[in-house]
Length: 261
Image (cartoon, rainbow, N blue to C red; front, side, top):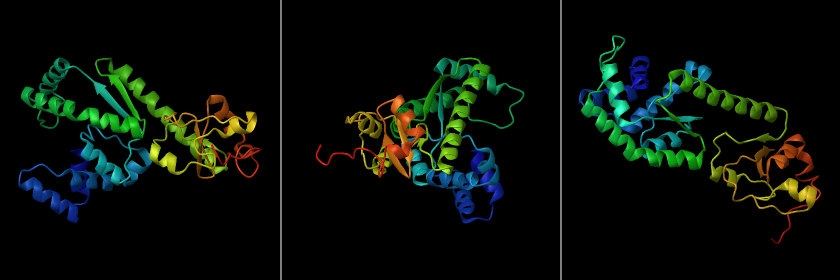
């Protein structure tokens, strides 16, 4: 809602804004495609590009996920707050009578029941998609204190920022970099595997041993080097690869991958 309002305020004469206003004046729900397109425009603003952004309560359905993915909008971290129906209604009642409430919301008890029913009907598919494709889903108990939740969320984001900074720094000087936590999809990883495919180059070079890493789907021990991905057997092998990747890949690797496996 806020992204749509901001878009209509900042780009009132755009064709997209006129199309959205047509739906709003008719009293119908905005199509997801228009909402996502407006969000994309807002995300390109200087504020979002420099300070980041938070998508609150979106996406809700797998169709919305697909629309975001088509525009290459992949949330770096998704945090799901779990709360019982009883607590949802209690908080809704408190919010309705709060003196700090600035906007009228559809938060009556029947409306909350409809929202919870829709959420439970769609969330498992959305969760499964992000857990499988990007491994960026974290679940927190919303009945904990706001200070605890704030600390948990801050820690998640700080770790993510450090991961991205380390990746960019190592890439800038030509070193190998871990891709764990960067939301790389299994399909992208498979398409960019290096000359050792899903076998560990460190195990092959150091022990002349073929270790199949195809079952390791989290990419915890996968690194990028010269625009290619290499999967390692464990943390020790990953550390060795990150220390000096050139020793384990062509043309200086002591043992190439056997032609017949």
